[in-house]
Amino acid sequence: MKLVTFRIADGDACVGVLADGGIVDLSAAGLPASMTGLLSLEDGITRAREMAGSVAATVPLCEATLLAPVPNPRKVLAIGLNYRDHAEESGQPIPQRPVVFAKMPGCITGPGAPVYMPRVSRAVDWEGELCFVIGRRARYVKADDAEHYVAGYMCGNDVSVRDWQFHSPTWTMGKSFDSHGPIGPWLVTPDEVDVGHLQVQTFVNGERKQYSNTEQLIFGVGPIVEYLSAGFTLEPGDVVFTGTPAGVGGAMKPPQFLKAGDTVRIEITGLGVLENPVVDEPA
Image (cartoon, rainbow, N blue to C red; front, side, top):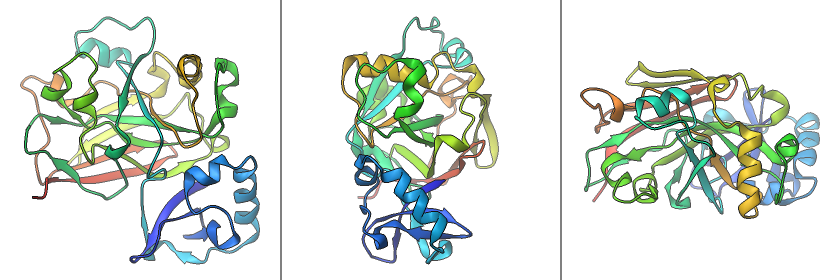
């Protein structure tokens, strides 16, 4: 099942299920209009699946604007250096435990939305990543049980302002600029995803820059959930970026960075295509 957050014209954002070239509007049946609200219901996913199986799509996909599947997450967490080849190209040792950092929730944006070139830097880099969304309140979850706490998976781009990233050891500033967390185009439920065997690709202006597979993750989804939930409670709607493979622009010689006019496309097996134009930040 593919869950979407969408808007028609200038209307309010709604949650739906992608089906038969259209969208089943879940809010029309009294379900919450936000993804976080839907996931917070104990039986939200079950009710969404039942409705999608019994009601015809009422919103043509061509008339809807897809937004970030979770537009306003409580938390956005990310794992650094989580592919061996990326750690190596960065000149860093293989981590012994997940390298966790935070992205501010305000960086989240959706498919087709612009990624801004900030006024204070030209060192803006791409990072295609598998993301997952928490579906149940999680604390002290064991890795083997993590699948029961994941609502679904989607593409993400951990856009990074490289010079600002290394202003301090926390990375937070360089990872949290407005519009620097595209996710989408939809949230795919775990029953449709072989999460350990997904091809991850990033293209800039049609040229492939990253090509890897989630088989190369140092810490998979289970260990990530176990590690995070040992420190703090994960809540429905929290977004987790799992790390990027080799091929980032900052590691190239000479470095290659994004510029206004570029288009970045992330493709992950079974999760669709996340594409965003790069534009100068508006005044």
